[in-house]
Image 1 (cartoon, rainbow, N blue to C red):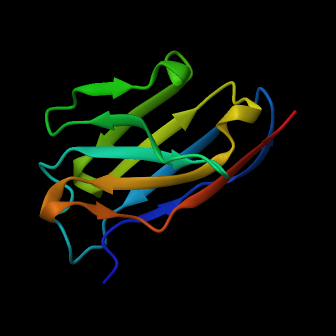
Image 2 (image 1 turned 90 degrees about the vertical axis):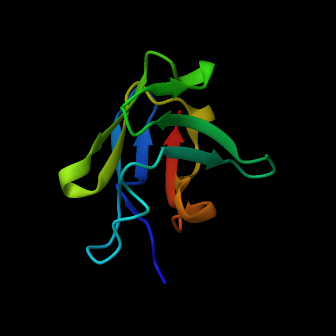
Length: 117
């Protein structure tokens, strides 16, 4: 069963922007609200790392490397969490995964982001 569906990945040049979206299917609401939602990423040969998170009360956290460039937000009415990524750099190249801490943890399938210099 699919709990979270990401979209919005792609290829951009350094300095460009992308917005990732992660949506819970219409018939599955418990993974979204009031769960804490997060974006992780995994680059080739590296461990998966937490990029940003947003709690049920919209408290946010960011890894230092993306502070000031990425913004996480959520729209509970649309059951969607977003990651706005600006000033992308080659080090941001990775597969980005959406995560919900509900139901003992649920992951999306991932979306590829490739930044060329």
